[in-house]
Image (cartoon, rainbow, N blue to C red; front, side, top):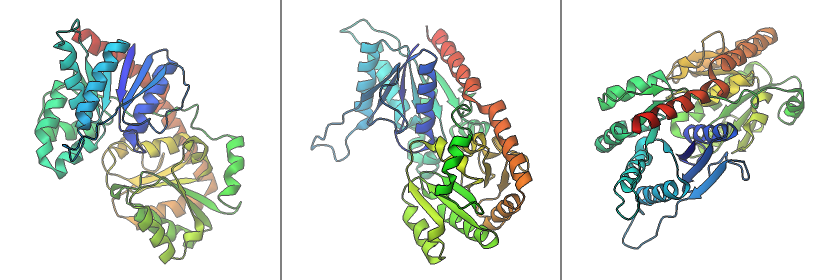
Length: 382
């Protein structure tokens, strides 16, 4: 199949999932075309069957805010026509689903060329819902773009339920969970040789990975780590960047633990960093799925997270990780100290975490679900 993929090319989970999906599909022989305003962060140059098409937005003086959605729709239609795409797969309803809808209509009503059908699939990642919660004015256009989609998928049962509740739609939503490349995300002796760069032999190593937005509650990460390092020797890797980084660094300085924390910024090869840790901290306000926790589990790193949103669908409390209420830094610190103080239990839980990731969320199991769904959409659209 020839598939166009549009996502936000940033450090967030949706862009990562969309990029990894495209890469996995390309390996399986599909022709993948990314269409976005910049190249997705995990997309590498020269990958077979992968193509990137940039979207240029005119800086016309009339517009205070350039209309990216219109430029994107035009580019989608152009690429679909020239490259003979079979379908578009857009991640996030706003504005990508709206742009795909316009591109489909443009091609269907093109009187200058032979009209053609261009079905599109919309994948909901979560902010689609929270955006509407923050600004209800987006609800009508979001609902309309979802209902107009030829196919709709969601990354967790939680998000399926919330979407149906918020938008009151009857459109069927296919739940296809996020995934991880289990062959890439795993712990090896070669990778573990790098651990000494971040922790001494007698120190435990914790990790947090996110885009440092307020919803990630990075100050809670510092609070949890502070309590842990008071009980046992430990260090923390903070991977990522964003608006809350400065507040996290300030809090670490106030507590006098800044020298025990590695603020590493954005990292491209996450699979080489995650395995080094013993425990991942993910105290988010809300996660529709919790991709970072899944990637950690695949690397035998025990996640400690909040039981908010779709996270309980990923982590089994007490078996593959730990769950606590949002803001309960005391419990999360207690879980961390408990597991880090028992090497045998830490190793056993890490093995269980990887086994769960392999059994339920490996790319080899999830990508065929997308392929089957694409074929179903194309059959219904023909």
